[in-house]
Image (cartoon, rainbow, N blue to C red; front, side, top):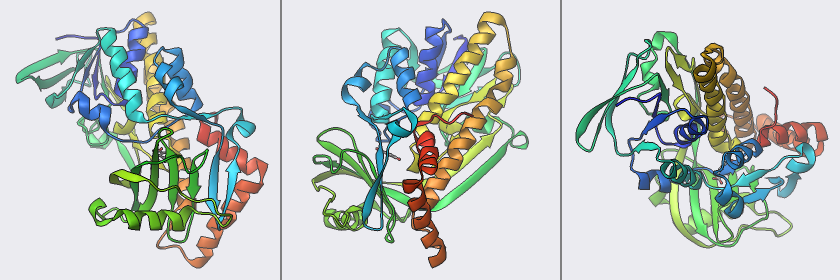
Amino acid sequence: MRTQVGIVGAGPAGLLLSHLLHLRGIESVVLEARGRDQIESTIRAGVLEQGTMDLLTETGVGARMRAEGAVHHGFELAFEGQRRRIDLTGLTGKSITVYAQHEVLKDLVAARLAANGALYFNVSGTSLHGVDTDTPSIRFTHDGEAQVLHCDFVIGCDGSQGVSRAAIPAALRNDYERVFPFGWFGILVEAPPSSDELIYARHERGFALVSTRSPNVQRMYFQCDPKDSADQWSDDRIWAELHARVDSSDGRHVVEGRIFQKNIVGMRSFVSATMQHGRLFLAGDAAHIVPPTGAKGLNLAVSDVRVLSRALDAFYKERRTDLLDAYSATALRRIWRAEHFSYWMTRMMHRLDDASPFEQRLQVAELEHVTTSRAAATAMAENYVGSVAV
Ligand code: PHB
C-alpha cells in the first residue's frame, strides 16, 4: 500500500488531520487500533473553543455541532458558598460550545467515509519504520493480514499510550511531566441542567464541576482519589459530595437524576519536546496531556493539526520544508500556554493535600481576584476561549 501521509490513530487529531488534508488534495490513510463503535462511544470531555468551532464549521463538519451543541457565553466559579460569573463573551467577544468529543468523532468519521477516505479500524501490531529517511513506512495487521503502508510522512496521533512517541529516540526527546495526586470522578446523569452555564467549584472537600451534554443529560465531576474504584461509590454518596461542594448559600443546588455512567480519570500534565523526528510528527495526546480543568485537550489536538496541515500543504504545493521544520516550535508555544493555564486552574481549584492553611487562603484570594478584577478575569477568559496570542 502507498499513500502520501500515513496517520496512526483515529482520535480527534488523526481524523481531523485526514479531513483537512483531503480538503487540500492530499491523500492519507488512517490506522486505528480500536473499533469504530469504541471510538464513537468513549466518553471524553466536551468543550470546544471558538477557534475549534470555527474550523469545524469552515471545513464542512460543523452542522450537527451547531444544531445539537450548546453555545455558552460564560461560566461560573463557585467558592465560599457563592457563585461568580466569568463573562467570556463580554470580556473576549468569543464563546465556547459544549459538544461531546465522541460526537465530533462521529461527524469526522462520517465525513471521511463519505469522501471515500481510507480508514482502517481494529488494526494491530502497528510499528513505524525508517521515519528518519525519506521513505518511511508503517507495518500493521488488519483482518488477519500483515500490511506495509509506504508514505512520505508518518503522523503519530495515537495518544499517550501509542507507539509513535517511542519512535523518537529517547536521547532526542525531553519529556516534561507532572502527575497530580488526585483524579476526577465523572458521572452522566439523566436530569435537567442544574445551571445555564458550567460551574467550576472550589471547596474544602475538593473540586467539583457541573457540565452538560444535552437538555436531558448532564455531566458532572468531583475530585477523588485516583486509586478509588467507581463501584465503591453509591449514588447517595455521590450526590452528598456534589451538594456539599457545589450548592450555594442562596439555595441554588445541583439537580439530581438517574446516574447511568460512572468513571474515574487520573490527572497529569505532560509535554514531549520535540514533536518531530525526521518524517515523523506527533500531534494531540501523543505529544502532550493537560489535566481536564482548563478543557484544553481536544482544542490542542485541533490546533496541532491545523498547523501541521498547512505545513504539509506548503510541502506538497511548493516543496517548502520550512513550515514542517518549524512545526514543533510553533505547536509547542500554544501547548505550553495551555499547559500553564490548565496547571494554574487545577492548582487554584483543587484540594491539595500538601497545602497549608495559608496556601488554602491564597486559593480563595486568587478566586476573589479573578472574579473582581476585570484585567484578571479577561486573562482567564482569553485562555479559556483560546484567544491568547502565542
Ligand atoms: C465536560 O463537559 O466533560 C468538561 C467540561 C469542562 C471541563 C472538563 C470537562 O473543564
